[in-house]
Amino acid sequence: MKVYIKFITIIFFKSLFFVTFIMTSLVFILNLLSELEFFKDENINLSFTFLLSLINSPSQIFEMFPFIMLITVQLFFIKLFENKEIEIFKYSGLKNSSILKILSVLSILTGIFIITIFYSFSSNLKNIYLEFKSVYTSDGKYLAVITKNGLWIKDKIDNKIIITNSSKVDGNFLYNSFISEFDQNFNVVRNINSAKIDISKNQWKIFKPKIYKKNEYKTEEFIFLNSNFDVNRIKTLYSTLTALNFFELFTLKENYKKLNYSTTEVDLHLLKLISYPIYLLLITLFSSLIMLNIKQIKGSTFKISIGLFFSVIIYYLNNFSYALGGTERISLILSVLLPLLILTIINSLMLYKVNEK
Image 1 (cartoon, rainbow, N blue to C red):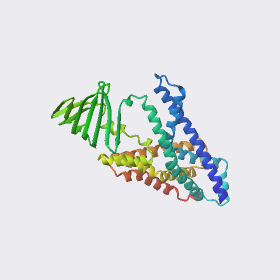
Image 2: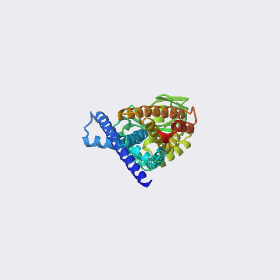
Image 3: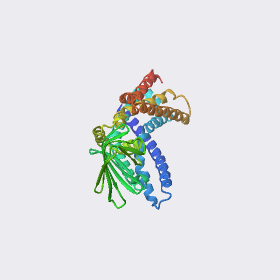
Image 4: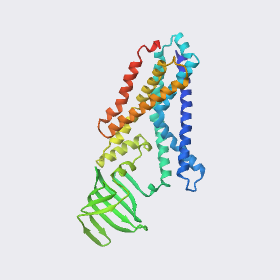
């Protein structure tokens, strides 16, 4: 049995490395083309675009890894079928269920490695990538971040630099905000204090502002302030979750809570990470059972095509379920569990008489 385990493990990881290498190469090439297009008007060294393409690839590979695992398992079985090794296993007394057990253990170990080591590695590189890229984007003039001291926004409008700090975000409103306007030389133009600001549009409506301008002080019923930020941009700009490791995600979640801001997005991302090894396990079983059920069909291309077809269905099923959870139409836990439950049911049905296949 130990010989079989070693043999299956070697073939599995050879297939995994091969598929990962191919997909990484494709991702890198696509990233490189994208970066070349982005920097076409900049005097940038080619090696810099290579570097950006390289450090951006791991986070994308992480997102694609369930698909990589599905193709890996297909390639694994195609090798067994073509070399008649699956028949040798059968005649030697090694059942299909035993092969599935070995693959299940390997997939769980791979999943644990991915979320504990590879994810931290890829998120750190993604963060470096975003820092490099921000220097060359127009958004580099703007910034929105959440810290333990609240929401901070740096904006630039009509040659004025505007710094906003708010203690709370709730719906379309900022609460307990302090706004400082500076000229191009960073001289203070005016300061504004307000308990409530409507940010539903790019023209903010500031209610009952207290305005400090040089030696003058006045209050108004409301004033308007143009901004590059509305509520939707604030929601999406200040956090890129794939650039945050586990510890940073939990810190971000705590900061959200202090601001009374919805933690749905972060909670969903954390649940997806936690369930990742189980998801890879179910994908592995699914792909294995598909291959065992169609092993009589000749032609490797057709077998891989079937796998690609089902991978697209699984991808959209996942996204649909996550979208329902993200919009709070179903609970977050259910949105993560639903694809897993569907895969479990399908796998259970295909497990029928698996040793006879």
